[in-house]
Length: 212
Image (cartoon, rainbow, N blue to C red; front, side):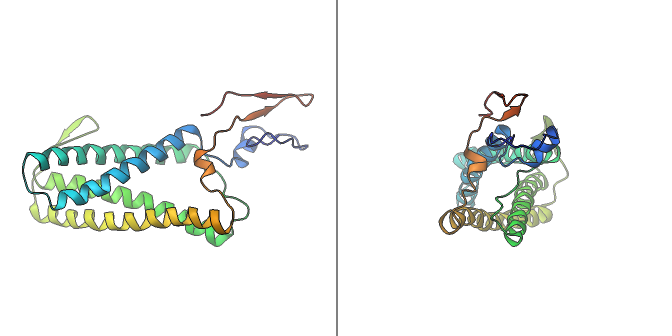
């Protein structure tokens, strides 16, 4: 049986490893983390650019605190997602997607992760070198201020945000192009809910609980 759609397969199952090889969708945890991260990024990036031209005052301090909290949350989510990728297989792309597209898709994902980490880490270091105190992983961190380094990390922070906008645009455009021109629904691996089925004897199928 094929784990992803319950279609009968005459060849004997090789166990959990065989299921992983045929996996075409992300698990429910990966889906939740993906969409929560996406939502936070769509809030965080405009909020950051709004802060640039905001005069110093109570409103700026309040919004900046929100910006910091969201930024640290995104940082934690990325670390969790990377850990999940280590211990769980990545679903295979559609067979119709040729190798060049697979390479570009993988490159885009790698650059997205690197850019998000660049944004969050540079933002953290910018704050710390400005002499501010941050609470990271329940630990209060404060280092010797260095305004020169703070300015450098701020530049990295801004440039990384512009790069993130480009990468997200490419990410969304690729999904649209595949849907319109190739009839490939790339979103289904992150949206569709399935009920995985396990093989048993005598052609009997027992459904496990839904993963959504």
